[in-house]
Image 1: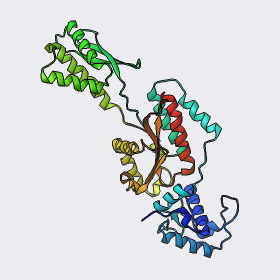
Image 2: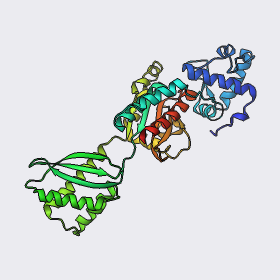
Image 3: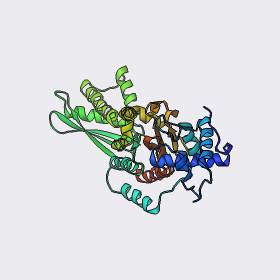
Image 4: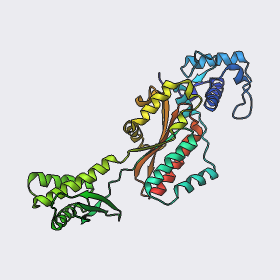
Length: 352
């Protein structure tokens, strides 16, 4: 069904619709006409409509596909189309308070490796949303300057990779039988000569092409070390998580127990982290926070879940990842959207 602009609704319909959505998002329960008659509007007044008039407006909104009536209740709840209308045209966001901003920035400023900051960010998002928090791990492909193979004992060497930004990473390497120190030096020199200004992936492709074509001047022992060193680093990169998820237990709330299949489907979706990461990736180029509601995204069509996602940037302004929140469609969008946006900006300051 096509989206309906909020300004095409009459004043009465807008007021009733807003109250239904806000009441539903707050309670998770369908809202009836009698309850609406006693609810105060955002301006502090009442609807000044009789229950009969409210029922008439509810029926109109239901006919437009904005509300639905569950079989077990006489009340109404917003459809995914209705939630999209509310989020795009009627929602009044609640910006984080100074205390909330300070708390987020303090947690992200704690010293430690960047992986710890990503874990903290995911936990923060879970805490502020009451749902599950997600953070995509930044793609780490720094330009490199050298790799050294340092002999530890007759069976092992230490592969030391140095980036042009000064970062250093170490990995243990099992040596082929009979490998001589001279072979380690030859392999180190060969790799370093081809690393300058390239990422590991770029250098690996160039070296592999030379070795495969027989153009390299390496002897067999040094060639084996080069290939083994490349394999260790490539395997390490493949094992790095693409997504950190925290707070899945928040999805098992009292409302979830009434819809076990939906929650089971959502948990299964989260277990497929690659698919979720691909969804978040689609928000990488967004200028602002993106909101995916229910079946708007095929991945969550069965679980009826919503995702709020925002890219985060380093200090140079380059997008390095995406973070977000996933939960039931009755998320508190007005609060969570600006909190996700602020958390993304705060993490960007930490990334550097």
